[in-house]
Length: 216
Image 1: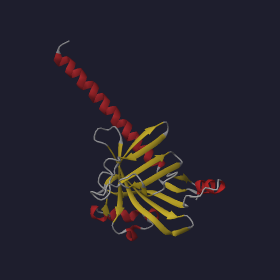
Image 2: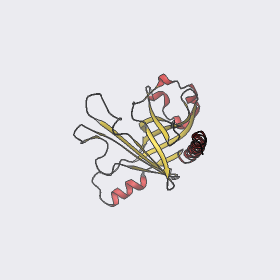
Image 3: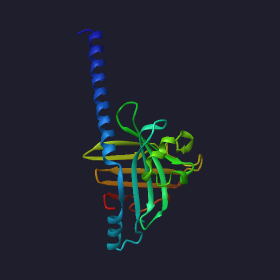
Image 4: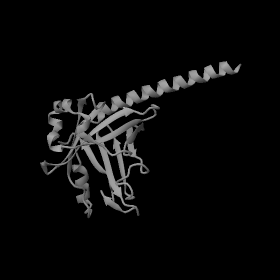
């Protein structure tokens, strides 16, 4: 077999592999669209902490996730709001999650946006049409803190890169974000470390908040 034929075969195999990867990532995005939205809380985790007399009990948090449309930002967008489960009017955080296939189709890329005027978008899960007016200048994100999502064993896992997700330049601080998702469970850990490795934000022990869907 001559070199030209071998090159053609190699190109065909590569093209087939790329097409398969693209189909897998499309399936991942569809699964995310089915699994991610919903009303969650970590009541079971808090009850477990109390039953075990844990010193540092997880804060009770309600989590609301809803798909939204803002074509100028991206195709796969979700508004994510955390609130005090004992006082729903106290909003803890508001973010916009954006998902897209990586350029090599080997994973799903996840960018987390923060709102420059969060009060304007508060309770967006109850009025998702407001996001149709969203423009890039309404948002901010931390460069290098994008997550990569992968699906295996009926579970998504995602994490940021410790090497690139860093705080103020020169400070030595780094941020670690980890997420796990199933059809009924959303686990989130977000911690910041100083240059010596000490946790400066987030939980030192048992860092994941374990949110369960459908309890509310």
